[in-house]
Image 1 (tube, one colour):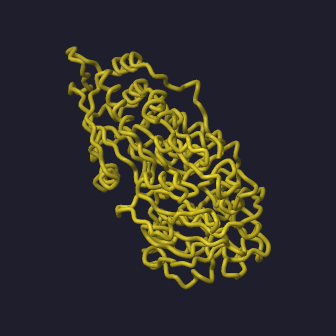
Image 2 (cartoon, rainbow, N blue to C red):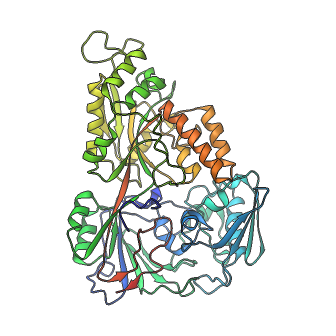
Image 3 (spheres, rainbow, N blue to C red):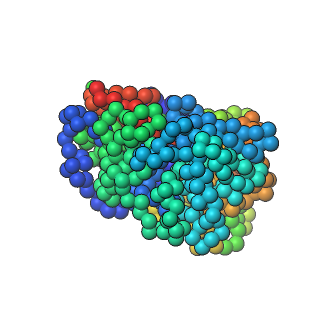
Length: 553
């Protein structure tokens, strides 16, 4: 868990979804610990609402400890963090994938875990496509399955996935494999809503959820059938918090062994404790300034927002280095393009086209684009002769790390310096979602947005924020060429070709500037070293690591 490991996996956005209920913790879950019970106590700002992966995003944690992906991010980066499949390959046709399931693997209830369970999971989802109760609302959903021709178990150890077009989806998807004998009689209507999948769960991961107290904690028990051996600890309790304060207190007192999502001040305070190791990790969150680029319904206060020259000029007035150093106190990487540093295969500094902080240059470009201060009062006018007065809305997207208000204040100040005054409106997550919804659903009407996104490090994950039909394209930007490149990305298996396409798309959207990337924040975490060892270099938030291999001290 060292500083800024380049392969550090992000938390899926729903893991930090805050609860509206006050924080309550049972004394049994967060009792004073002397290490003697060998139970790992973890704290996080999360609010799981059901243990059903088809019905929610907010329970990614703790389900990641109990359910495996077929392959997923970690298995492709770390050979010791494999999922349901042990090996995988694609045929020369780039359409036929063969995945070998672990031989002799069992579900936590002792039933055989085979390729038939994996085939069932995917076909269960495929069978719902187009139906009123399509399974498209949870973390395990139908997205990507429209490009799948067939999924079949050739035998207990061999799964075959045939796609309609070349795509890396068979190994990149984050669908959790579920046991057929548990789910085969669950209707789609129940699976997407009322079926809670109450504990004890049945999974192939190292830790099995055996108790769930909503708003409080989940308790997990070591899986005696885990494929690499039963974990050495006596189990795990994942405590839910709504703020970081009690989590930091629990780490200091010894009531918690590990916590993530702590604040900078807490992280710095905990770093002085000799029994605690602090770390920060690169994640997939991107903090950005978005422009409302839509015309007609939902448009902003000026047509200048639809002009890429105006947006590009604004980019020169944003000092990403100062944002990192002063608003984030060094716990972020300066923003560049769509690709975040944790997506190591695709990240680029864009050094040949990268903007630099230069308010004078921003002013020159605004002048050249026709946005001048005609009367010398310090406020520029748009091409229709109206003085600029932009509304900047901001808030924390549910599930993402908070953006310090200081960052917004810096941005407002820089824009004022170049003659673009803004008023700031801070919104709660619900109101922010409503204001930034697609105009057809009542969103829009704002000018600038400071917010964030948190997606996977796959090519589609890093680029889809610019896709014209993507609901979370908060800028409402549409570009046919970008969509065409993205379509090619979705139908590409070759890694080098994917890199080239991602670079093309990244450069295109950087030049058009519907988004100005502000920074990529890091996740702050801490663990105690007096009770357990084996934490490794980084806690994965894409898999069960390191809770499969922790050992009592």
